[in-house]
Length: 280
Image (tube, one colour):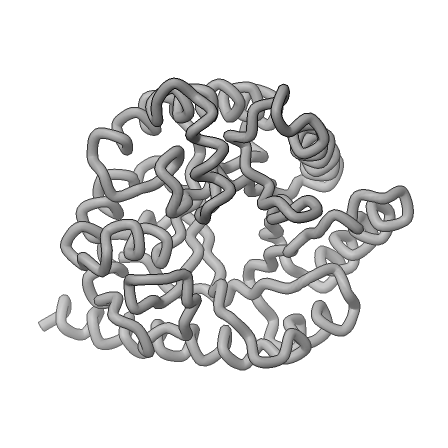
């Protein structure tokens, strides 16, 4: 069974990093933004990664920036309609993969986001399947460039979501290294715990990283574990025990990761209970 690990998320700011490092995490995931890809910002990010590594954190993930200007960084965006966004995604993915290769860290790219803008982008294609195929073609190229340094995360958008076995089979056929966000899948399934568990089972061999997040199953609420409707006792036994994980929780104060720590405490207690039940 998957054993909970302390995986924390923050930016490249020293304040956030030092707050997380106080608790000696096994995993640190950097939230990046557009300003991390200016010449000065990129150097700052490199130095921040090296600083976290110097403090003994061996597993580091670089989360591709979520947005560019007014848009989410949706890989489905056609180049002819969104040339600046398209080039931004290309450039930043290349820069992150350079860091990953130089510093032996991981890069996480979203397969999609949710909302009216992505719906408009998908509508530019002849069909949803055509939009998905365009996403797969782009991710195939990123996967070839990144090798064992890149992974792709599920969304709530129709182009790269977990929850539908047929779409999961399409994704598995590409042999991607996968990141699994529990809340995204749960929301995609409108709060269906059995569906979430089936998806976890189906994709587990390809999952290398988890975003552990609770949810009420309706909107992107990013709740502390144990405060939503996800059945975590059903989740833990279905996770890939070789994968890394972080707690991707909305924080009241970005300089204080208490909600992430509370999530870890909750999952650790549950893991102990489940282990005892197995031993009986």
